[in-house]
Amino acid sequence: MKVHTLVVGLLQTNCYVAEDEGSGKAVAIDPGGNGQEILDFIDSRGLDLRYIVITHGHIDHFLETGFIQAKKPVPVLISKADSVFLEDPGWMRAFPGNETMIRPKEVGFVKEGDVITFGNTGLQVLGTPGHSPGSVCLYRPGSGDSGRRVPGVLFSGDLIFSVSVGRTDLPGGDTGQLLDSIRNKVLILPDDTVIYPGHGEPTTVGRERTENPFLF
Ligand SMILES: [Zn+2]
Image (tube, rainbow, N blue to C red; front, side, top):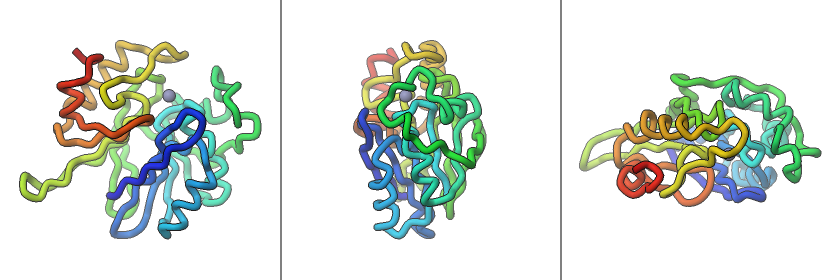
């Protein structure tokens, strides 16, 4: 799996395009802005988009979902708990672009234990509440051992960032839940797992285990 990063929208959200290299099938994760740019990127690489996946129901992570879906009619996947915000972003209603946002149509729900498959790649859904009630992470396990190791990949949404953690002061946030999610779902993964967060630079599980001051 190859990971492409596009920094989009007002809050510099990381939209990731995850590509199954053998087949060219791909998923777009958190298209929170710059919809045309995301579409152009997908087309320029000749990718076959299969799903749009939303890590959590904050509009800076899904603003352009409906726009992309109108051009490429693929299912949108999000947790049931956070799906309500696709229709009405609630406390984020004043976010620029909401009023003209194209509401996504075909929406499917994902939960802990589901696997999102595209080509030979599977992304496991981890239920990781705390930043929002229905936040999920997407995990692709690593493979091989020492000499030929391919590290795992975790798309963490706004659960954990490079040496930081997601906010819990927003409606539906819960600090205890967030720390439990990080400890029970993220820190149990191998140290070399690469974390691609919703904002900012990538990091690794090993680095966060030793350097993240919010987890001590
Ligand atoms: Zn968020």
